[in-house]
Image (cartoon, rainbow, N blue to C red; front, side, top):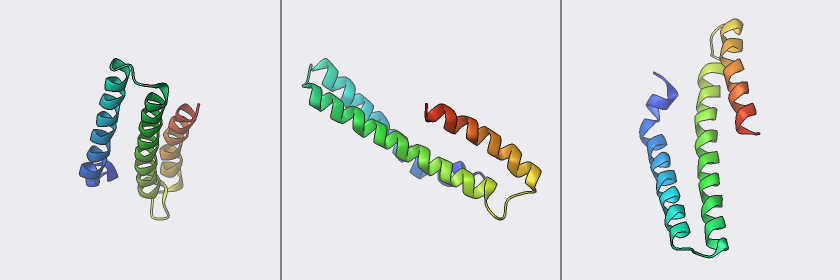
Length: 91
């Protein structure tokens, strides 16, 4: 079973919090709130997305690339997509 399936409830809770934060950002923009309020909301969303990314990435690394992972060829095949995602994410 995939780590995202095992941790599905916890991950979905994080996604729902992010959705709530995005909704709050939209409300702040529609209400023409002060820049500081908008920036704080953006920072909160960014932090929440980073936390979600870290949690999923850690689970993936532990499951697919950890000491008990498959043979070296399989590990390399699992590593390449992770590197591509990280490069894209960190741009």
